[in-house]
Amino acid sequence: MTLGGIPMPRCRRLADLLMVAPTRGGRPTAEGGRMVTAEGLAAYLDIRRNSRGHLPQQLMEQLAEAIRGGLLPAGTRLPSTRAMAQLLGVSRGVVVSAYELLLARGFVEGRPRSGTYVTGEPSPHRRSIPSPPVRPVVADFTPRAATAGGFPLAAWRSAWRQASYLPPNGEAAPLGSAALREAVAEHLHRTRGLDVEARDVVVAVGLRQACWFLFEAIGRLIGQPTGQQIGQQIGQREAGAATVAVEQPAPGYPVQAARQAGWTTHPLPADMEGARVDLLGGMDGVRAAVVFAEGNHPFGAVLSPARRRMLAEWARRTGGYLVDICTEQTGAGDRPLPSLLDLAGGRVILAGTLGDGLAPPGLAYLVLPRPLVPVVAQVAGGDDGRLGGTAQAAFTRLLGDRAVARHVRRVSRLHARRREEVRAALAHVGRPARLVLGPRGASAALLLPRQIVDSVVTELAGRGVTVGRLSDLYQVRAADAPDGIVLGFGHLTDEELHQGLQAVRTVLAGLTRVRAGRGVDGGPTHPCPARPASGRRPHAGDKTELVPGAPRPPARSSAGPRRSGGPRRNAVQRVDQLDPAADVQLAVGVGQMQLDGLGSDEQGFGDLAVGQAGGGQLGDPALC
Image (cartoon, rainbow, N blue to C red; front, side, top):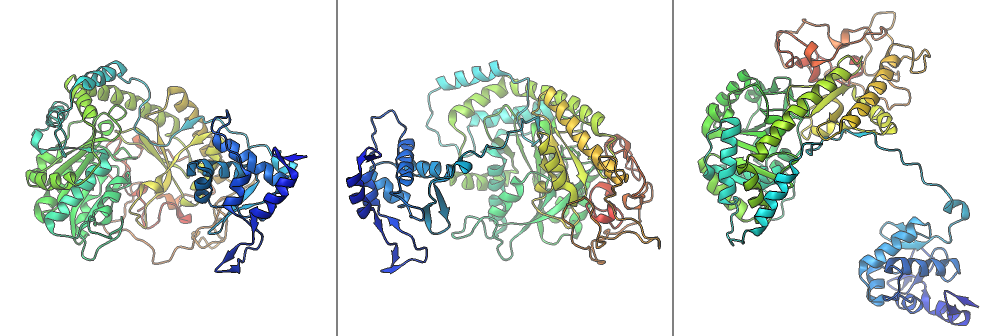
């Protein structure tokens, strides 16, 4: 009789060698049980490199056989992966993979700070549990840069082929190759009318790195502690650190880069006229402001001319720096607006990407005021992450052949069409959702009360639709920041967009039916607090479920956030004044939200959608 090909008498002798009582400092451990010595187990195992079997699979099968045969009883602690790998003469990854296979099959379990233990042979019931069915993905609305369709593959291949023939020049160019910097300057002049000199251009590996170069350099100029100090961790705030105001919501890289460089960050909320630059005057110690003047993400709002002038005046008055971030997808608009570079000159830094979905992964640029160039060069020279020479040469050719400009125009037209499709599908969704969709970009936001966002995301996931969370784009969280879901649509096919919007509309229609007191199934369900006979408005502390089964939000203090000042707006009925018992269909298409003289079809976001609805917060039960 054999066990794993080994005669049983030998197995018994090996078993005596395999097991020892686990000890620490000569005393038994609290875990009890027995521990396998790596030496004894290695004598049992027979790993054959010339066999057809995959090494991790071989090791897993032999260990599983030892567990089934009782050689490794339940409660036995296996040797560490490092010790086992050394004795077997294999890499540690082989042992790790084998242990993971055993874990997946239920033979072992991991105990924190203790090790890997045998659980015994899995029961037939445990082994036969079917995996949950994988629901096909209908649409993934998670925002991303890649754009479906229209990719200039022939031009891309040609550029890389030509670049691969070029001999390496051996030049260490921390700011990017001279040819690429010249091509970027010409591209910005041709597409945006900006007078940029190549010597003021810096090429970086992604906007995160570009922003870190920038904040590290400005920090050195103003003499603040920087993120390069030994022992400082990312996000740690130094005493006396300078403050940067960052437009919110927005992608996370400006905030992450600023904190890495030792800055303190402060939120600069955005509405449908762009960043609220009028709030800068009330912020102490702000030395820089980050805005997305050519298109906020995910709102798509463009910084209005009046606010551009106000921002330039702030920079001249305070000596602060303005960082204007623009991606090619958001910057390809049809309405010429004064550039911050023209308005504020030497206080403005342009940061952006070139041809999203076309560029090498992470290609970004900076256009710097002349005094900052040598400081950024010093910072970049000490960083190891650089765009490869072949990639720089390929993109130089693409810019010179105007392939990037043509691609950007195609993407801009595609996104304009997609925005109209989204607006047509979701413009008339009912309360409690409100659509925010601006004139630029490839994303939209659906504002929802904070306490039901998780339920909506889960319901959509059950229908095969993935969405982003608006709260994830508030890296600097403001107390009155709205919440909801984000729909990124630039990368989707037409069919994916159509099916995804259908699913979103269905879920939102269910919310509207629940609000109207009918319930999704027609039953008398009402998720909002009913108004008492006394006529008192419902408050956050009222013990009534907003959504059945959903967690109840904390009570809102009577001293909660209030409007910063100015007359109360009465041009439209406030959200928290609508009767929750009525089946009210609030048209939320941006083209229909002309609030308080903001006027423009796509500039009606105003206080209603930025969490300052006359004293109530978006997501507050009082707005339900």
